[in-house]
Length: 88
Image 1 (cartoon, rainbow, N blue to C red):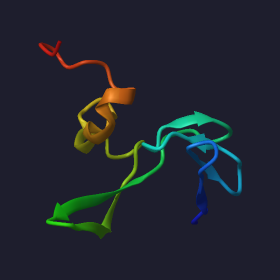
Image 2 (tube, rainbow, N blue to C red; image 1 turned 90 degrees about the vertical axis):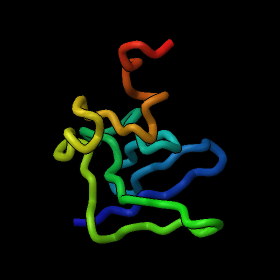
Image 3 (cartoon, one colour; image 1 turned 30 degrees about the vertical axis):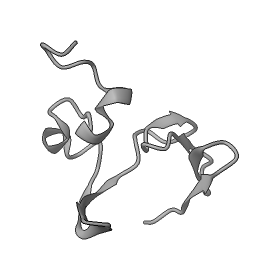
């Protein structure tokens, strides 16, 4: 099943068109009926090109070991994860 998630520029957030759940620009769930963060796709940058890997979907509730062990996504560690040991 696929739901459309739209960017709401005035609010600077994503919103699920079906259930009205709200997410930060990083994809972190903030309000509504959703039970987890948005799913992720692998991305990489090559020069001025961003490449999105469509072959694998990282689900925040199923890929915890790939997301830093605690379910935290290293790409958004600053907003949803506790500080790492030894970091300031």
